[in-house]
Image 1 (cartoon, rainbow, N blue to C red):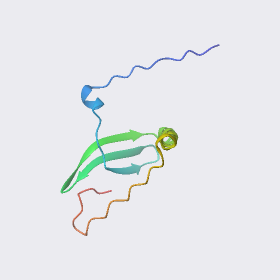
Image 2: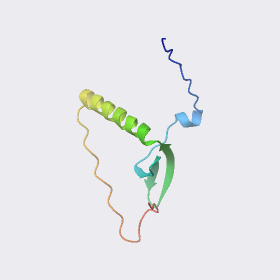
Image 3: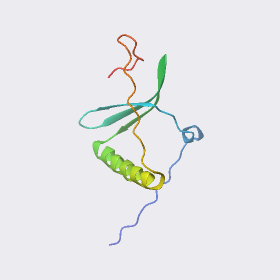
Length: 99
């Protein structure tokens, strides 16, 4: 018996289509899920831009898709230099994020 592919329609609010800029990300996980918090960090304060929660299996598929797209990007536009990690603020002068 032939399986028919069902088309999934996606709705998005206009506000969500604008996207959200992030220059800092924090990942925490449990056995059942990964939580990806994206922040816009700009002293003296950072703001949570978005939180994405997903299963470990979905995260692994996402990582594979990101790697494939990164490879295609670099083949077309050249190698991307990895950004340096941000400097750790001095003791007592953190930007307010805690694990």
